[in-house]
Each structure stands twice: as structure tokens, then as C-alpha cells.
Length: 212
Length: 234
Image 1 (cartoon, each protein chain N blue to C red):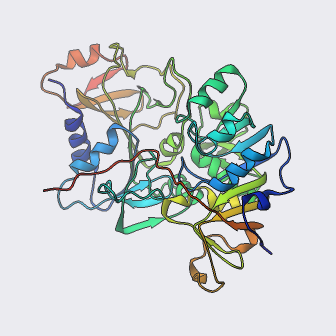
Image 2 (image 1 turned 45 degrees about the vertical axis):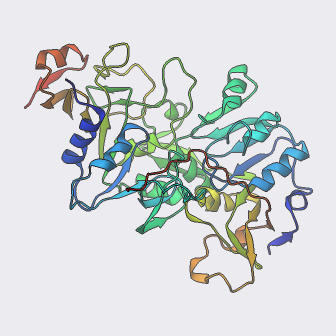
Image 3 (image 1 turned 180 degrees about the vertical axis):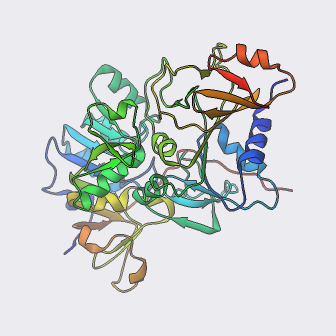
């Protein structure tokens, strides 16, 4: 069995999240990571529409139209929360004050290039804040399935889709392994029990070495 | 000095011109100038270029102006929530310039702060960099991005005092304060106007110098795009 989304999020939380960090999570799968923060670890999540210290979803009837996250979902505030405008929010991001971002991807290349904003065969909807996040945050971790629905590799030698950033990805967590981008090679550092190293190589087009 | 008006129609009187460049505050449907958008829809002004992070939804927010065929071009970071948009874009009846969200915010901030251009790492090596000056600082590549000044900014505040100082509520702040600084004329609508002195001077978000016209809006719908809730543990 490959790892489930919950298992991937748990791995991401255990390997990446450290006490005291300021973190920006991408829309979609990475948001689940908040459910797996180890006990005793206190971190703040940034929402690029202008909030630091995002709280959980509100209880029914307590939604506030003036309080949403970057995915336009209703959220709540915490005692530690702060609000700011969009320019200040991205100054925080561009100025490399955020410790970590974890986001989804369509393709990651051997050299850490990332493509995650233009879906093939669909109208381009925009990059939102993704280009700002990956170009400027100290550590960029990708959470994605290892292959697309048609089975094609997403860990690739060279991205074919429009790029979000060049040489920006530090680590990739997929449903079958954890990989570090190290200059022009991808290092496997952890794998799901059900797959062999050879299978991982076959399911990727990037150059992968076993570094476990 | 901030001029006060009774409603959106009066506040926009004599201001709108075909082909204008507009900054429209808000993020998704959060913190959008609902009353001003309705008044612009009624005015029939055409060929607008609108700078806004998103373009509303099909029947609300800037989506109303889009459906009316009043918008010629959008400058945004993400326009995925609107089917009318997709159709018009594919038809070729609507132009779109996509900017990374932080670059968009900073282009607006720069315009308000008298900075004609700035350099950013965001978008290096992507289609965003095409046709732009690239410069190296400390061995790293940066793109030059230019300031984005509007003819008119339409923004939404939470409270204002009778002098024109404005505060925003929670994440409804978003692009509103930066846009207020970056237009030849700024029109602001708020939910409440209080006596001057009632707002804490140490906590004013937008000082009155940036607010040229102001009125108290009415009938706020404040639609929520995605209601997400958690269940109470038994």
C-alpha cells in the first residue's frame, strides 16, 4: 500500500514542523497537515490574504464573512492572531520571514523547478500567491501524489508545464516516498514499505538515487 | 479633506469615464465595495480596466460588472471562481493580465509610495518574467516590476470617523488600504461612521489623507464564498 493522504500529511508534520515556526500551507491537500501537528509543538499559520495565527474552522452559526483564509474558507482567530494588509503580508513572504511553505504540485524537476499553477487542458486561472511563496520562503516542501491520474510521472527530468519557480523546491513528499532535491539529483530518503526502489525509479522520470 | 456623501450614486457622480483604470479592493468576496459596484453597474460606464485580486463570482461582486460587459481588461492574480469570466476570456471579449499576488500588491503599494518600479525574485524564470528587465543583486536574479497607479480606487472599510480616517475588520482589510493610496481619486464605503475622536488615533489603518470621498453603505450582503465549519464534539 502506498501512503494515504493522511499518512502523507502526518509524515510532513513529523519531518518538517518544528516548534515556534511560522508556516504558510498551500490550498488543498497541505491544509490537512494542521490535523497532525505533534503535541507540544506550537506553530503559527500565515494566510496570505492578511493574517498570522489562523485558527480552526468556526462552529456552525459562528462564520464571519470578514474572516476567511486564502482559499476563501471561513476560519477563526486565536488569541495570538494578527491582521495586516496584502502588501504587508507579501512583504512578510518576500522578505523571507516565513520559515516554511508546504504546497501541492503538478510537476517537480530534478533541479527543483516547480510547476503547480496551470492545469493542462484547462483555462489558466492564475498563480495567486504561489510564485511569491516559492521564490521567497526559506524552505519549500511539496506534497503531491507520485503520479498523475493517467500514471505519468510528476517527479520529472524537466517540467513541461508552465513554471511557478525555478530551482525552488527543497523536499518532495509523495504517496510512495520522501525525496530531497540536491542540485541535479533527487535523493530518496524514505519510502513506503510496499514499493521497491526500482519501482520508484520506474514511476519517475527524474534522476533518483537511493540515499536512505 | 474627505468629502462625505449620502450614498454610492452621489459619491461616484461626475467621476466615472469610459476606459478608466480602477483599483477595486477585496479578496474574493471579502471586503468588497458592494454599494459602489452596484452604482457603477447602474452608471453604464464601459471599457474599464479593473485591478483586483479576483473577479467576484458570476452574480456578485465584480462579476456584476463583468456580466454587464463593462470590463475590458482584468489585472488579477486568480480568477478561478467565475464562469462568466472563463467564457468571456475564451471568447476573446475580455483581456487578462495575471500578476503574482505579492507582485500585484507591491505594484500598488509602490504607486502609492512614489516608487516607479522595484525588483523582486518572484517569477524569475517563469512566464511572468517575459519582456521584463532582469537584474542581478548579490549574485541573484530579480525582475523589475512597475508601479500600478489607478484613476480611481473603490474600497470598503469597516468604520470611519467624520474626518475620514478608516479602519478595516479582520481579513476584510486585504488590498483595501494599499489601493486607497494608489489612485488619483479614492472612494470609500464603510459600514459605520462615528464621531471624530471615537477611533483610537494609534489604530487608524488608513489616514483620511487617502480618502477623498466617503459614504456609509447600506444593505450589506457580505456573501461567503466557502462556508467551512467544524462539528462540536459531543
